[in-house]
Image 1 (cartoon, rainbow over the protein chains, first blue to last red):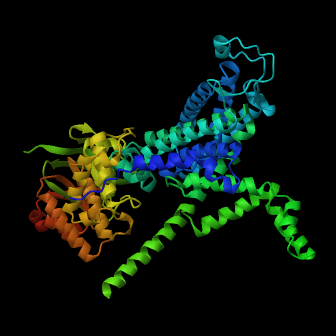
Image 2 (tube, helix red, strand yellow; image 1 turned 90 degrees about the horizontal axis):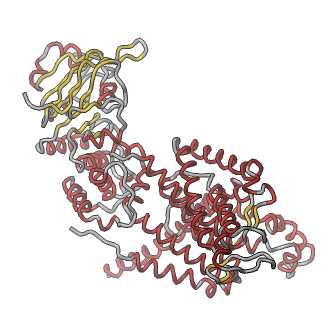
Length: 378
Length: 252
């Protein structure tokens, strides 16, 4: 009996690692090789990979994952304030605490499925936003946002060194390496690679198959002997922890946390990224992140002057018209472009960009097969 | 008298003022194929739902393998060894045939929940061999990497049966296994049922198609207006005047 066995995990991981770590090199022709943007890619990559474990594998559409971004950020900033400017405790606590909150939110929301689940997560998102914005002001510093201050205790830092804190604000570091610029990116990139590895393992494991089966037919799953709720709660917690990690990494880049990070629109963004790239596929969410973050970077930087420059080859009256037509879609209005792009993808490629690649690949292989057939016939 | 797998005693169920089941007593013996037949509205579905723990009867007791099934959840009933085939085939249409049969095999081995991600599915050799064997037994091993969603209804039914059989159930419950099938698919399903009958697995078949029942059942119980009016071998049932009046004479 022939059973195909894929032993390509190592290969996939090797390629992935090379691609991610060499991003500063191969993105330079696109003008996207500066550390801030790269770090943003990596952070949202972690967020989307985690989100895909829930939405992609089980089909449960959550609008509440910004909660865990927020929880991760606040926890990380508190870790910077109370413990140390070292980023390790910050991301560990950020991830764990987000996991605990995810267990709570998931346990309650997963009592329902489909649209009711989505609405419950939306309700949670709104509640947590309000908690952060006003109710828990002592913890979150309300609308101003939580920041570090020179006078913070930082117990661990003071224990191991007696650095005078008279100067400016300290910056985040990893055992003395500053977490800004490229070192910050590489730190995030290593975590992204780790996150991708975990996601790959889940996709290939019996656990992942069971999650896919729940998406396919939950009723059958129950009558096949599976208690589906613990599976869903576990997937929810894992994706919540990925979001928590992403949130704490945002605080690593810039040690402040604000309530706006928890708005449900932030959860909506990760839904867009996942669907645009290809929901339920291993690489799709990352592609979605790259496309959205890169285009956001380009389109939001464009203003009317750049547009006039761009259309300068046209006669003046046409130039002006074009600028009037196009300008709502750039700069502040870049979300209009995003919306259009999203509509086009969902209507013509419901499986996302990944499905597009697959279609192109199929066309090529089909052509080859037909050629073979022709040659065989001659 | 041989050992009984399922014992239903004095079960009554009323919906509003309507008596759906009246004093049901049934003994399903080990290794036998027991058919429950009856015209539409006789209470077959209600009885089925009581057996799988979905409906709680007003009075009475349902013991499976000497354990109470009333109030148990679907996955618990399955883990006890009572496995169910649905009226419309319920399979995982987005997954391959191989994956469809691996999932129940994993449930049998690992129980209702297991979180283990650092072992690939591809390394589960035993489960995979078992799955390939069962697919071979229904003649589908060459299609095992195909998606199951595009198969014909008869093929889906056969796949669903394979998914149930891989769990080696103590009792297999078939709810109208040939409902809505074309003649050809019905015959194919009957052949398959006959084949697995030889394995000595205990089965309950709920059915209204006489043709199916008489060719595969050891014992038949006839349900009419919520009561069991007769139980016996296929020949006894065929010759029973009460049954003929209540069922056979009326319709077909």
